[in-house]
Length: 193
Image 1 (cartoon, rainbow, N blue to C red):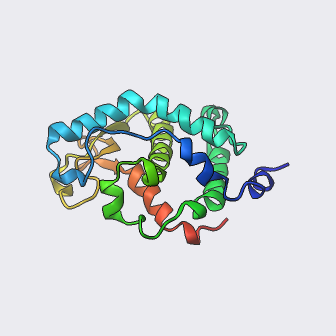
Image 2: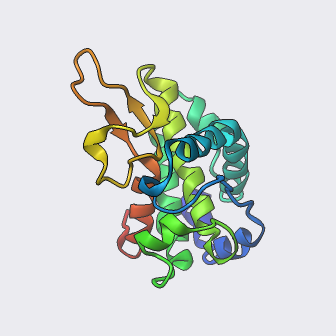
């Protein structure tokens, strides 16, 4: 049985499974631009200290859908893992979508627990994507976006994967995986294969 066939039998399974999904509990929430650099750094340190735990949680969760994260992440080609995750999002994210909670303001202020637990799942997916890049591209690392040019950006003072400014890069190269993942979740009603 292929992944798609196994997913079809589990429509709606994710909401029940998220009842026991552990919350991602960074110490400071709200729009990061309003945080002090110290508070923003505490959020980055939380991510760094808990990323393996969060990857283990996500790995166990995705394993119930037949997705082998560890093997896929260790493979020389991660495309099959990414395709499996895409198929999972198409199948499982729409039942999690709640229009009243799916706004940027709600996401940024979220506790990532209770009825907002989906934001913990999404953060874990973002951590996985970030780790896939960091493991394969040595110039990238987890950091805060402190580029003064980005003060108006959602990434400002939030943990991102980046190449620092310098050498051939006149500005940092920033990958805000949490924003990317959350943005895709907000569009999950229209995701297709």
